[in-house]
Amino acid sequence: MELTVSLDIVCRLIVRARELEAQVPAIENDDEEDPTDSDDPMAVLEDEANEAIEDEVRTLLEDLADDEVADVLALALVGRGTYDATEWDEALEAANEDDAETMVEQLLDMPMLAGYLEAGLTAFDLSCDGIGQID
Image 1 (cartoon, rainbow, N blue to C red):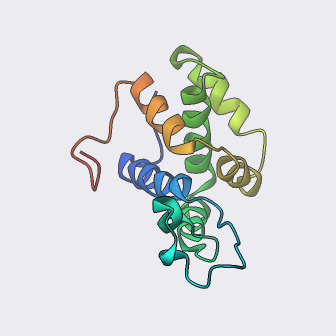
Image 2 (cartoon, one colour):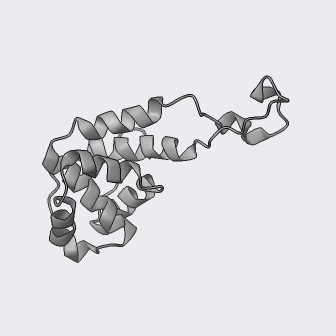
């Protein structure tokens, strides 16, 4: 298996997907004017208005060539357990059944995208160790 997408890009997607997964929808409470005044320590994670991270992940994916997006989706499918490492060609074929826009939407709809991508890399003895922000 040889990826057409660079490992740096996959690792950046993992970092951003983690940040996206860490956000939780804001709970509206009419009694509170400032959520930082809350006794809830998790309130700082509420980020309903900030869509910058999702936009960045979307842009990263949309800027890739079709075959690179297919690689990312196939890695996620392997990481999710839909296919194993020996079935890379089948995972890639399944990813390529859709156009790039649909592949991007499938990736953005995966609730554990970062974990799936990491597990996909691990299945091929690859990792983000020493690359970018991941150590």
